[in-house]
Each structure stands twice: as structure tokens, then as C-alpha cells.
Amino acid sequence: MKLNFLIFFLITFVLSGKGQNFENKDSNKNINSQDKKYRHLQIQNKSLIQGAWGEDEIENAQFAFYGDSIYYPDPNLWCKYKVVNDTIFIQRDNNWIEKVLILSVNDDSLKLNYLDYDDIEIYEKRK
Image (cartoon, rainbow, N blue to C red; front, side, top):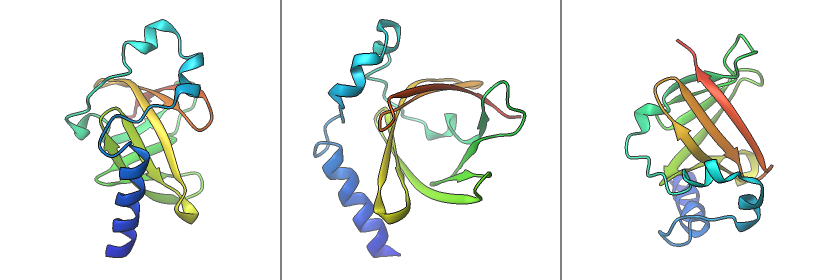
């Protein structure tokens, strides 16, 4: 378990540019100018993203953040994650790290840019 955490930490450290903000220049092409103002968000309080989230037209939550894990109910899958500045690094199977940029977050909504898929999604918090 400690070895997995160490490997995850090292991969995250390398991908984040040795402590600098991670920037995927290709993913910035399709982000409109309104979203660019969120590029340097500093997520100081992870409690804002804690809880269950889903799209408006879907009744059930698509994922939920609990402590240091994210839960996906559809495949019944738990993954570890880490927030570095404005980016969520999710450790997937086979040590693949998914990178998700937080464009905006408040008590009721979460706007994410999935950098690996060049996709922007808006989620509502489930109560």
C-alpha cells in the first residue's frame, strides 16, 4: 500500500512539472475565453468537491468524492485521487493517471475539463 502511494505521488509530481502548475497546451485550444479565467484556480479547500455529483438530466449521481477516493457507482469502482492547484489527478487501473481540470466549483455546481478527452462537463451536487 505504501509503495502504491509512493508510485502515485511520484507520477503526480512528475506530471505536475515538479511542483509547478500542470498545463496541457493542446487542451487549452478548445476552452472558450470565459473558462480561461478559471485556469489558475487554487483549490485550497477540498471539502468543496466532497460529495456526490451528477448531470442535471440524470437522476442518479455519476461519481462521488469521499476523503481521498472517488467512487463511480455504475461500474462500482473506487479510485484514489489527489488535487494539485486546479487539477484533479485520478489514479486509474494499470497506474494510468487521468487529469481533470477544475474550471469552477461552488456549493452546488462543479465544472470540469477532462484533459485526456478534451471534454467539458458541468455537474450538480446531489443533496
